[in-house]
Image (cartoon, rainbow, N blue to C red; front, side, top):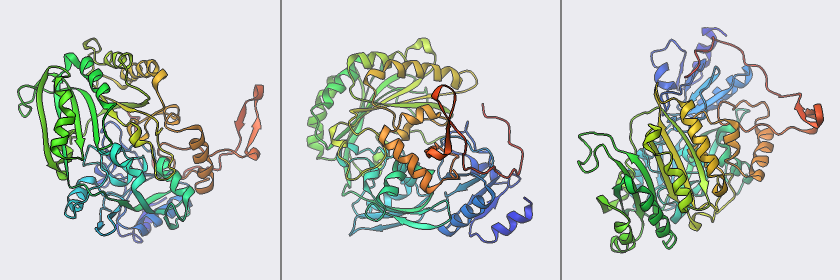
Length: 489
């Protein structure tokens, strides 16, 4: 294609069309992990649903795959060629206080939504980081600070406007299109591009929250005590624990600076007095370095985890656990041993039975898991992904007896098809494959955690020794525009 083709395409849009030579191209292709960057042939900065429709049609006519990105936190793999559809600029928000809902554009971040909802005494089921995009977070399930109280965030979604592979814009709701609605929550961008989403808000204006910081040397003792403590907690009590290496930074409290700590986090929707009573046993779980618990407005909820706002290159993985016993704790702490030389954040979030009663069918997570494990290791030239991945593989293999699959929203960038498969039940995966054939048979949306099209009998032929081999893919070759860049490290 020529520059003129792109110019004529750009004339039909409200947003911009960026080619690699454009000064904003590098910024727009970046995501949350600087080690993974898209290398598309063209970036479309959509501003309206019509921009998304035009882009999908443009790409489909030329057999160009589409990658979708808002904040980049849900990056599955870097795109090579094709179109990167950036929805970052679509950040409009409409609050309906009577219906307790918010309608948000595809690029809206929780940091934009939370203060607006708070003006009405309401809150979204947001996660630990305000920089995450609302739409991508919900499509992956959405593990919120209040999951035990209100369920997964995806359960609160009312409807969404979706541009499908044929360029049509349709409103998808559980009442009108239950199968496609179910597929989107777990299938994410395999079936189209979300232009906007209507989510339910909850009547939460304040929390009793914060946490305890314990000496990391006694992490095993504290984790075992916390695990026992979670068994008797009401649904209003949400908690997690993370083993973290605190940097030697002057902005860090002196008692924590340069230390390994076990941080137990609390988000309780009941009264502050009841919260203090409930957490009292945790104060005696181990050597306490610092306590930071208080009654807070929900607008300060991000301070509970204090996730770093800066971009970092990291290797990550996850597992859903049916229990957190002493053997499981011992296995996890081998990752934090000084002999590895790799500071790894080991985070465990309590789910419990209160998070297992979905209001509707979605293809996300095992609702019977008691805990969610998240592993994150910063990588650089010395601490390579290959080395860290080997340690992760051995640790997760040791945890297999108590594992109930993986959590889609915590899979690291670059997770392979094998790990992706662990994020779904057999039934959900087969369902998603059938839906992929129905809604994206040519696999236009494949620069993601791709759900493969389930073959029909006419598409396969017996191979050697009874194996089956795919003969047809129904996926046209992409029209090359530029040479691919160098491979990512």
